[in-house]
Length: 159
Image (cartoon, rainbow, N blue to C red; front, side):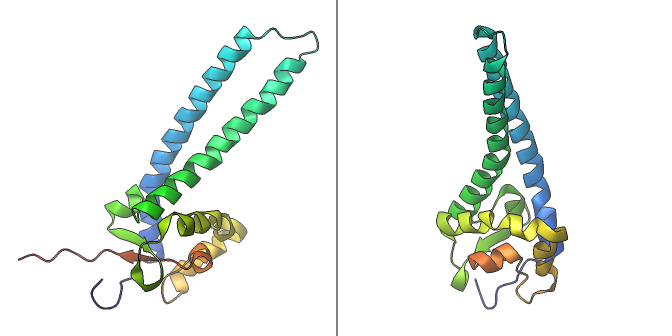
């Protein structure tokens, strides 16, 4: 980065989240659909006992798998893309990058910490997210916790 970093504000970050949510919504829906079909296939091959205990037991497993997909896929998506590449699809489209101290890439560990802290940012009417609108470095609560910032990528020099 040349000179002072240009921090990405609340609205730019919110706009960058939209493509990610669309992609994740489709991915989670598809993964849950496939898990449901696999579950139905499994149950069709399993003999249910008279009390329906087999269905109840595997129904709970199916619900757990659906919930894990709904939580796990977004966590993996954000953690890997921000940790390894510095940006999700939405951030890349808008020229944003997640950076750590001194403007360095954050790595997978810091990205995981940042994404584990996101529920805190969205709790209490998104108060932690709104910090990005009012703090000097445009940091949300999860950025404060992980020691990260979201910056605008420097445009390439044209010669």
